[in-house]
Length: 249
Image 1 (tube, rainbow, N blue to C red):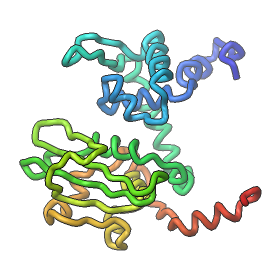
Image 2: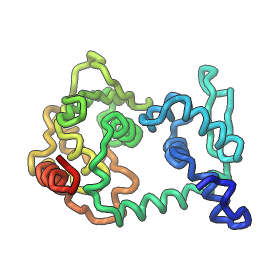
Image 3: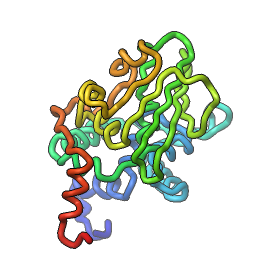
């Protein structure tokens, strides 16, 4: 529905006109998670084109939800949420909590993005629960649309955790081998890491302490504790159900 058809006197309609444009709420969520530079925000919403992100950031700035500062480290522009946007945060997070509790987890696991998942995981690593030295964790995801994909997290005390898409040539301390769907389910709270590991659906190979303390330093999504795990169906059942849907060849 075009914005001009909304009854402008209605506060709900006025709020919707600010937040309805596609990606707007996800951009705000990425800024709230700590991403401030353009490239960081873009990595957190990988399905969004840079041109559309530029447009949405300009709209957010014009609407008083984001400020743009040219004084970031290294001369990079930074985008920061305003107080007006901070008031929105519990409302939008509440919307996410509602969806996490009420929407079938198999629907949310039907369309996954490995890079987005790894970027979110990178931002939730708790360095205080890791060894006081550099730690390198390699994720091997073997059911992505592109086939097996590898990602490396390089964690150092006092520094932001790096996410590498190509081999950084460091000795790997821990290998985490999993299907993308299983890792996403565990991180989002649809299943328990302990259950996935016990069933062999997530394998940990390497540093014993990192493996034993995985659930301490690999912090789950902020939505993970909103509802008991729904135990997503195995891939073969999901595929069978998809094959039996009307109109599917």
